[in-house]
Image 1 (cartoon, one colour):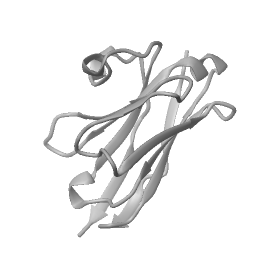
Image 2: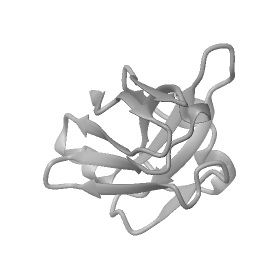
Image 3: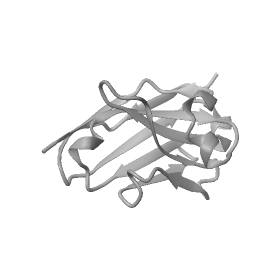
Image 4: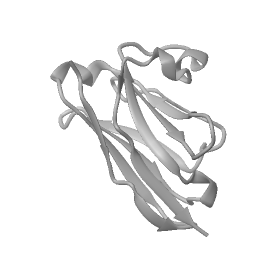
Length: 127
């Protein structure tokens, strides 16, 4: 069983930066694709991006392209979401999720196709 734990959330001013981390248990997770999602109050869950097991491939939603960057350190079994130029509309609970295989964009952005989920970390961007 894989467990995911997000960290790094907090309160930041607009234009600021945060780096979220998704730490996993289980060495096999180094081969897993990791996706990040967020959910704001009263809104549907939104796909942010995904990174392949090797870290060699990454995709992003248009809303964060150019501002958010995914990376991973498989020695630490941790995936990072670096967020810069944060906007108030980025305020949400951020979740990481894992699935065994890389896939098409349409499948990677579908949360129901991920096997494991973290508990989430709150990001609040003040204006």
